[in-house]
Length: 415
Image (cartoon, rainbow, N blue to C red; front, side, top):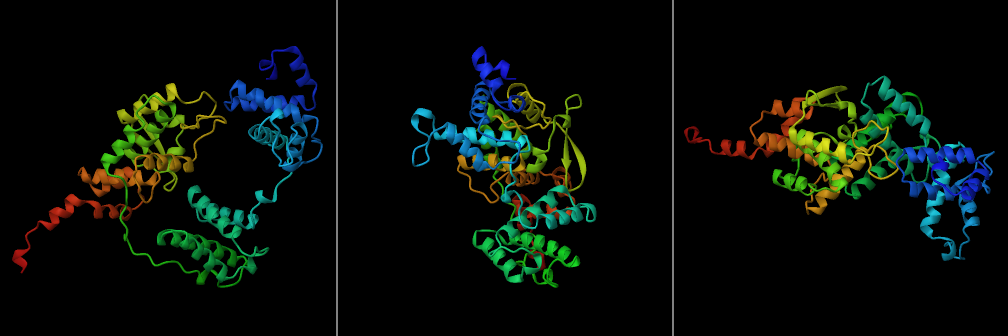
């Protein structure tokens, strides 16, 4: 790999004669496959060369060891800032970051305590139980385990055993989330996740008996809230805002069309792969994690054209099979969280403040638009991939046309 980057024989020889030449070259090759430019690959190569002779990788080393090795090659001021003659703070951070990744790829990076959250073994056992015995979807399992991680990390003081956790710890955690703006529905879901775990833990004798039974959550009322989404005119403004020739706009337009036209969830968009597009039949296949099935849709012309343009002009050429990728190295599939941030940022630029303010609000906008267009609740539920008809009933409260027709009924004969 390095032979394609360094053309001067002296520079190439210096690189190949330094320690760990084979390992450094293999790491560079991986960076190249991830989509880094040749200019960036040269910077990475110079950085690894600078620290190679200062690291002993026959044993595990820490990130602090790597930072010391970098600083030995980049003299710093008393304030810890690299001197102007030897580079910048950004250069130092770049070398540390890639040197750390290189050492980690060789299995020589010392594990950090922060990489192992409290009660990892118990949380993993809970995840296996939810997957193998309860049969829950991977999304639900990941969400519950993430909430457990928040709870364990915020325990004050930290606990070393589950039997030391008391109900006041759980109450304090829920109260803190409520003070930070969590809605009653979100708090109820959080309490439900904790209740589910401590029921599991109690059955195995890990925690105090009866702990799960006294976890309280806010009272909820069936369909008490309105599903809030932007007006369809605002959705059109949103789509128009990315109708440009900028690569990021071309990619984001395809994503926004999928969210708004099909009402897909963010994880369903993130989960799309190249194999899910059937160009011969003009169809797109969406994997529904909650139902554990794949649902096929006709590929609408506007959506198909946006995706095709993204594939031809924007999508990085790489071995990844996910449909939507990052545009800057390292090239990787977009996560569900990235799609939420993408929608939130674009809505904010239009001055729209909604709750929720991420990708899910476009799902609400899609349902409301279909209802206003005269589709039945059954048709809307099937389009959105709802498992139960009750999930679609909330949209009857935003059917202003239907409500006006009810209000216009003459009930005079009943007086």
